[in-house]
Length: 323
Image: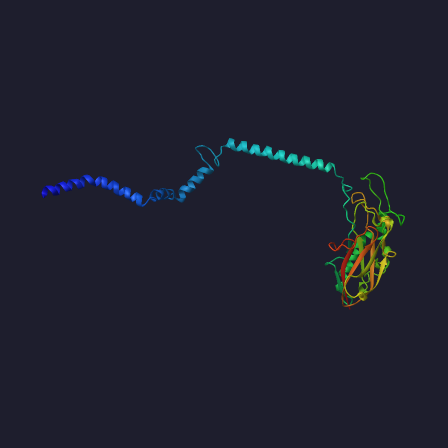
C-alpha cells in the first residue's frame, strides 16, 4: 500500500505541469476577450501629464526642431506656395473685373430693353403711407409741413434760375454730344405748384384740413414718357365710399408732367436735374375717416394696374383728417 501511495504521488507530481498548462488553456477558452481588454488597460494608463508632454513635443520638438510637425524650411515652402497661389488667384479676379468694367459705361446702362414703366412716390413721406393729423392740433401736422419745406428747398425759384435754363414746353428736351458731356436741366420752379408751393400758405393746407401731397415719377435714364403726349395724374378712392373724396385740385396746370423735363441723362451728366412734380390738393375729404386713395399715371406706355407692384404707375396711401 505504501508503494502504491508513493507511485500515485509521483504521478501527480509528474502530471501537475501539464495540468497547469491545460488549466491555463481552459481559462483562455473560457475568457477569449481577456487579451483584448489588457491592451486597452495599458493604453488608458496614460496620465494627463503624459498627454500634456506629448502635446508640448508636438507644438515644439527641440530635438528635431519642428513646430507642429514641420521644420522651418517646410513651413517656409508651404507659406510661399499659398502666397503665390492666392496672389495669382486675386490677379485673375482683378483682371476679369477690369475687362468687364471696360465694357460698361458709367453714364448710361448697357441694357435698357427690360426697364419697366416708372414707379411713383409721394411727399411728405414720414411713417409709411398713412397721413393722419388733427387740424386743431398743430403738433400732429407740423412734421408733414417741415418735410415739405425741406423737400422743396431745391425747387426754390432763385435756385432754379441760377442752376437751370428755361425750356420750350410741350416737347422733349433732346441733347446731343458725348455721353460724358454735361447736360443742361430745365427749370421747375416751386411757384408752379401754386397753392401747394408753400409760398402763399406755408402750411400747405394742413392747418385747414386741406393737405397738399406731391407726386413724382422715378427717374429712368433715357425714358420718354407718354410717347409725345404728357402723362397726367388722377386720384380716386381706392376702396370704399367714393363720396369721401369730393374734390382734388392738381398743379401745375391740369396735373401733367411736361415733356420738356425728359429724357433724363443720369446723375453724372444731368447734375442739376430736378424731377418734375404734380401737386395734389385735397380740398374736400371726409373728416374722421380713414380714406384710402389711389393716384395713378395715365399715358401711352404707362402700366398702372399690376397687382403685384403697387408702386408701378400708381401709388396707394391713406388720408385721415381729424377735427
